[in-house]
Image (cartoon, rainbow, N blue to C red; front, side, top):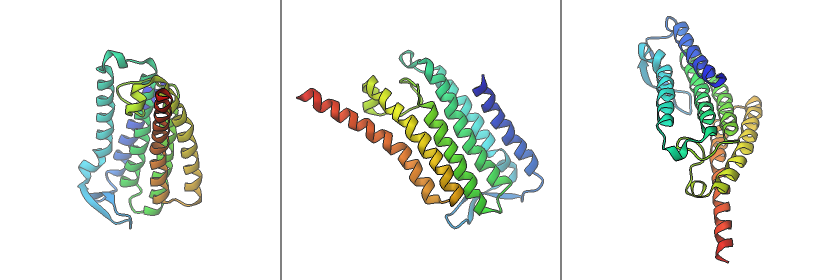
Length: 212
């Protein structure tokens, strides 16, 4: 119930930002920015104010639809809460982008910090969602080795829980000291690479043991 309310709350906040910003933003808004802070890919404000709320609403509907229609063998109880937490994480990230594009578009320096903090929360929430999740049709480290071995899946996601919580917390501290695009990219890559590499290591170790 709390997760459902959180998803709805994020969407409502997005729409509230849209309503607030509509009369104060220029007729066209940059939706993308270069590394130098130069805006491009401009949208008319009538579209821009609904851009992220519409995407988030579609993400919620499509994700829940496919989860409900997932094959019977993947109907794991723990996956439902995990999928909702992933939706919440995505919503926080979209909310940050929505705010930066419509309200804080003239301050690229603080925008980097806002996006970095939201990405840190994204990584941590994703990590938390991995804690007790079983094999499912939608989320997780769905690698050949995790899907083929329940023990590999369990160990990989247990590690992912700890690694992503640590990476997200560290990124918050790093952002408070000095926001950096490079730091964001590195932390995101590590959040994917470390559990994936560990999963392959377990697979390789088990395969070598069986051959002896």
